Length: 172
Ligand code: ADP
Image 1 (tube, rainbow, N blue to C red):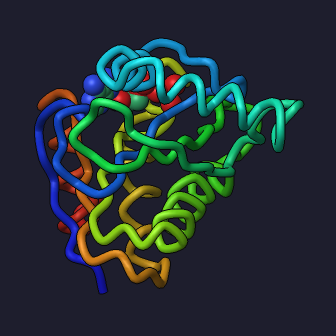
Image 2: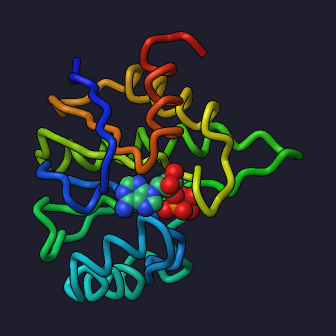
């Protein structure tokens, strides 16, 4: 089973095989993690995203799925782009958020990545409450069989870090 760790920091700076991007379906960049990855990773990532749109995902990458590109100038080797669900009070979309973590790990295994860094998918612009987002993230990676040896959650602020800490220690 993979070792799970928490880091307070910036996902673009992680020295891991693959970093996961909280992308949007267009794969053409955006704010938050997505913006930071494209800014620091350089144009190579966007060029591959364009190719993916043209070849495999004309209608955009569906929510809950994941696809890999190069990591450009980032220290990581690959970026795994996944599209989190937008939070909605009126509808339970938890299965889609869980799917992002599961599918990202499946893609990581396909690549042969041994270490993977995840942001707190959907908890920024997409509005998912941090306590629930952290619980789903931790439960899903724990339940998903994968060859990946290290899973690192990279949290951008102390609030997110605390929520993931509680989820990891099982006190939520
Ligand atoms: P989403 O659209 O899926 O909500 P965001 O990128 O807006 O994605 O936010 C996801 C989470 O990532 C939020 O908790 C946000 O604070 C955090 N975040 C934003 N920038 C970074 C970064 N550079 N490294 C790690 N986490 C980040």
